[in-house]
Amino acid sequence: MTERNQQPNTVAFHTLGCKLNFAETSTIARQLTDAGYDKVEFDQAAKVYIINTCSVTENADRECKLHVKRAMKANPEGLVAIIGCYAQLKPEEISNIEGVDLVLGAKEKFNILSYLNDLEKSESSAEVHSCEIDEADFFIGSYSIGDRTRAFLKVQDGCDYKCTYCTIPLARGISRSDTIENVVNNAKEIAAKDIKEIVLTGVNIGDYGKGEFGNKKHEHTFLDLISELDKVEGIERIRISSIEPNLLKDESIDLVSKSRSFVPHFHIPLQSGSDEVLKKMKRRYLTNLYQNRVSKIREVMPDACIGVDVIVGFPGETEEKFMETYNFLNDLPISYLHVFTYSERENTEASDMDGVVPIPERKKRNKMLRILSEKKKMAFYQTQLGKTLPVLWEHENKNGFMYGFTENYVRVKKAFDINSVNQIEMLKLTKIDDEGVVAVEAAFEDFLAKI
Image (cartoon, rainbow, N blue to C red; front, side, top):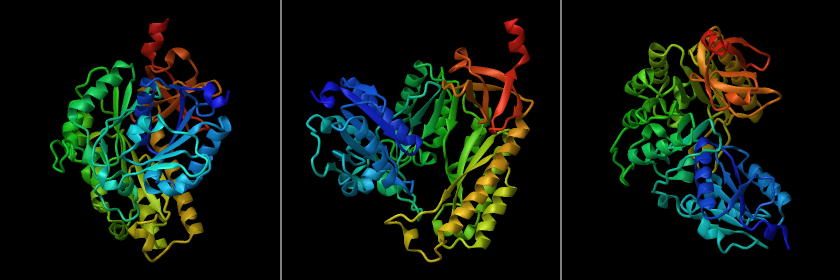
């Protein structure tokens, strides 16, 4: 009997990329477990291995091959299915990777069960089922529940923006949204599982409401969505993931500042601090608007955490324009950066632009901004020392320590205590250690309650 036959109803997953991918993987996993599959770890022998891919990383091809090899090492006779953004963009290329049996595009991935029923181990190239991206005009609600302390809740998919460096519209299609009713019902399901935190996710969540009922009009707005979610009982925290600065309105910021459940943490893509580069990127704002968004947040939530996405090495980013970005970020009261090195993507406008920045220079600029990010984070953490804040503890035991986050995204640690897992505790932030993590001690009220 083959190893595959010894594992007749087992499935393993590996997810690359964004929170949205994790939400969708978790939903597909529930479909398969409802159909009788048992979920196992990716390095265990399984009948089926599903790899959910990303197109944002420049190493999509290498990462996909790496995880196919991992699956084949765990079970050489296991079936390997590739889904996700890279699968939509490069299905034929993936189908020729040794070990891959099935490639599903944006429309087909949620019907994976029907494709698995008659699938056999491929001796040559894989089966490919991939739609034209304009067929991906529907919405499948999803949420992840892999980590007991937080869930990623998908509220929107696709993007109508035409940023010159980005392939996501080619991989995920037009902007469309879940209905408020479905989002609220999913939030209630999450709350019933004793999950303390929800992270709202999508490709362009500030565009929420477009395509809500299958048309391009906005039936509701992002403000409508968060207003309704703030009423859901049983969720301690709701965190907004990345949101475009031009879609983050004053009214939404004000709601978060007064909210019962939304936390003071924003992640706002900038991409460049040079207006000229922003125009070449076809971003829908300039630095003045971005600065106004940050100022508004600081005005109503002085202790809010503000994260920033930035791309270095975009075509035409001269040393002078890079320093515009550096100085703009250095002067902004932000908390951390996510720094991306520009890499050429097929079928994007930017790939044909003049002014290509040499790779070593891109790497140098990336390093400069990463150092700036650490300085910004440490400066933000310093402002929080001495304060008593609620910390939500995660489940991992790392060398005798456990880690968690405050509402405003300060990462903290203490000695591992199984009774603290998935609990929110009021703790005083005492010092920043060598890891760049804040150590904590119990609030005085908690100490008195224990004696």
